Amino acid sequence: QVQMVESGGGLVQAGGSLRLSCAASGRTVSTYDMAWFRQAPGKEREFVAALRRSGSSTYSDSVKGRFTISGDNAKNTVYLQMNSLKPEDTAVYSCAARDNMFTKYNYWGQGTQVTVSS
Image (spheres, rainbow, N blue to C red):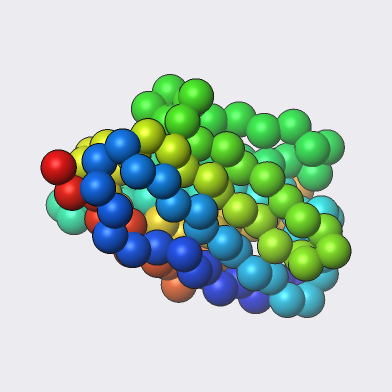
């Protein structure tokens, strides 16, 4: 199992940047597929980005070219670098993990609020 804690959220103006961190304990994050999701008020949870065990990454179309997911095995931490933020990026961002491609993202952090003002 893995325990995860997100940090780095906050208030930023449109066009600004934030870096979210997902600090994990237990197994190293490199043994999991890791992902970031977000949920805005009144909306369903939305996939943002994923970092697979292979090292490959994927992004939703809405953030592609603006966000970057990365991992630091030495710190057992996954990051989400968010640039050129837009008001529509406002949401609670959560870190998630799955054991393998046959499972759901069943390990979740508590989430961190990102608010982008116009």
